[in-house]
Length: 463
Image (cartoon, rainbow, N blue to C red; front, top):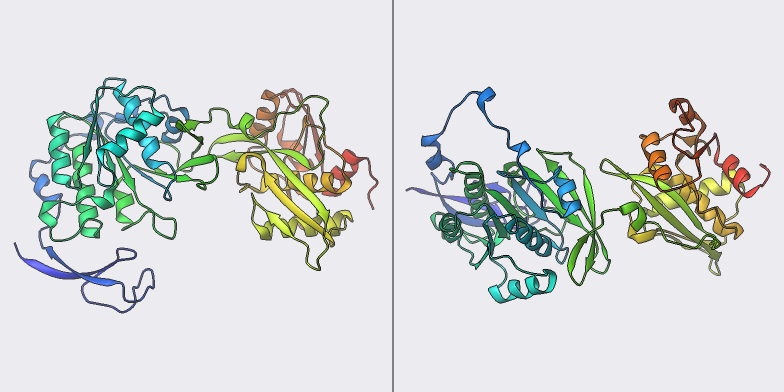
């Protein structure tokens, strides 16, 4: 076999036939490294001679045959469970819970009679066993373990035990012998290993589920070539600070479900535990006669699901020329804009006040539908007057102080009704799209301006 020389960027994996001082993709300097590769290094070419051709109408749909792990939020993000011959990539920042989650998935699959191979190129057998003892009540006999960074050995082991599921942790630590001396983590090795795993999942005599754990780069993206994501059916990203209990998992690509679907987990001593009712998790439980100022309730959408969330604000006197504006759950620019709306449109003077806003449970407020609740929580703290715990606010707020409608208003109100809320404020224009306002078991109030909502809630006259 002939060899040729290519140059690979060690930062982003971009390849070039000649050395370049600056990478054209990531714009980093002096990152190109010389690599020797074989000209016929396609992992697909040697498999293509026995390709099967059949009519589309006669092909079987694997989407109907799903493995339901019982980890509800994980199954939800995937679209109802794992498709048997799918290839899934799971990535997160270090410590996000990738290995913890996949070990739980492996044990859940084994309990349903599947042979599962867990191959790690990063950790020893004793390290993996220690984690399993900590997070699993019992380890099933059908979970097989190997600590090896040779993809050739992984493929042999999968064939030996007739694996139904193969988990690789992580893809950047494995290498194929045919691509040596290229090191593990090299784009050629990574794509070659991924190609073999795709063939294992879809090209064998029986379908095999493959879960690939991928490392993240410093830009919080899946390390390596973008082509790695194109090879797979589903790409899952776990988000969450190592110090926070809350973890979220989102599907940025899913051929068998909804892209953008999101699930929530709580990181505990027993690993990642599924938060099956996020609306209750993101609400603070209080007694009926307990009232706290600075708290307002809204409904946000994460994926296809409406979630009731509580927004908390604290307004305090500032003793510095520049008051603080801290938004732990929303961008600082967004908070500054909302504060300016309150000052200009509602005559609430905050020029000498510190304003701190966060959502209960660490939820990130990405949607504009929470803006009215943020403003009402700030006003509640400013006046030191509590809002009713059975009242919610759903609206975007423009710079003019006008309330603007948001998508899926009825679905949001329906979730409030399910949880026993009694009243909700929405934009007046959104009332026209609701045919029966009494069908949700909740009083729906439409207003045009934020000043009208504040006047109605706090019984203050508009200026």
